[in-house]
Amino acid sequence: MREYNPHEIEPRWQKIWEDEGLNTVTEDASKPKKYILEMFPYPSGDLHMGHVRNYTIGDVRARYFRMRGFDVLHPMGWDAFGLPAENAAIQHNSHPAKWTYANIDTQMESCKRMGFSYDWSRTVVACDPEYYRWGQWIFTKMWEKGLVERKNSPVNWCPNCKTVLANEQVTEGECWRCHGAVEKRDLTQWYFKITEYAQELLDDLDQLGGWPDRVKQMQANWIGRSEGAEVDFILCDAEGNAPENPTDDDIITVFTTRADTLFGCSFFVLAPEYKGLADLVRGSAYEQPVADLVSAAEKVSAVERAQGDREKHGAFTGRYVVNPINGEKVPIWVADYVVADYGTGAVMAVPCGDQRDFEFARKYDLPIIPIILSEDDPLYPEIGGVAERVRTQVPWDHAFDAEGILVQSGTYTGMAGGKQSEGEAAIVAYPEAMGPGPRKVEL
Image (cartoon, rainbow, N blue to C red; front, side, top):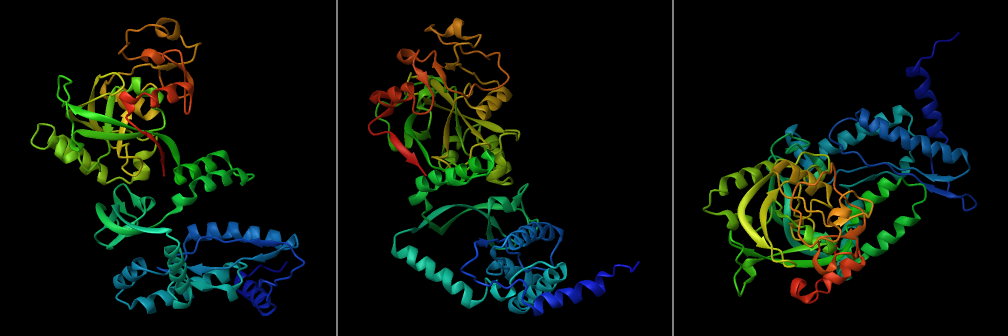
């Protein structure tokens, strides 16, 4: 039996495939079309096994559909524009253009040796002017339509690479490239206003047949459209006394999709990035613990902090707000599981109905007030119609986050609770608590 020699056999057949244009798109109008695209690699060196795994999966799909009679477009390109490529060149004491294009040639050869069925006549390189001119053209067109805006916001900044990092590019507070410490900075940037299409994007998720529900839910979370209400909480002293004529500095506004749970708010949480946080604790005994919590949170990406299964950390600010629905004094905490990107960076914590709030309350021995129950819950006969509030640790091992019946909720007790429920609509319509026009869509 003849021994298989990949160094002799594979290059020979790959040359035949290339000479015959086997992978070149035919643009045959009689054939069904299929576009298969994998992520473009950074040309910072040769390919690694992560690339090989990803591109092999895409190549299998491309070959499958070609064999099924499809006209398949399966191109390759390189994500080679901007500071990452320039920084890599500097590290290797080379000119960015020379370093980048040399790596592109190396990676292209590796792709060909792997036998990936790319149409090399369709190759794009992001640092080529002929490519990025179209990005500039698209930006200009979107600007003309009012679909881009410039605003100031906190970003992940790597001082070593001198570039902004996505949340996914920060691991345990370190840059994924240089492993240096990442810090938060407020920078002015351009943003595409996908918020103009949020509802359309959400509606079209239903058209993604065959997609796992968890993936579609992740997409919905990323789009981030929420219908709810804004609620104003007024700062007060340790005795619960608020100023008679509060100014803007005395008010902390939260956005909530569950105004029906206001009676269950037993503590208040601010994101470590909340802009007024330093002023709240300045000169007090709580200033240093809060500063330590903020410093620790800066070393963790917002994506990691928001994960439900991650241990939560907090610090008491020594300050309080008044719950507008019942006048109760509520302590203000800062916690790393709250991020500033959503809403106002302030959260009315309802531990009986939110699992992250529940875990935080358990850890720091904060009250868990049951205000929404199912009628078959063991607690319901005890407190379902009782006016006096139960401010004890309920005998639960997790939050009750489903819809149910409102309990311990004043005149709203007995109403249905849940998003856009009878109870939620009634509480939002209560002007003394909510103020005028509280309805809002958060994008």
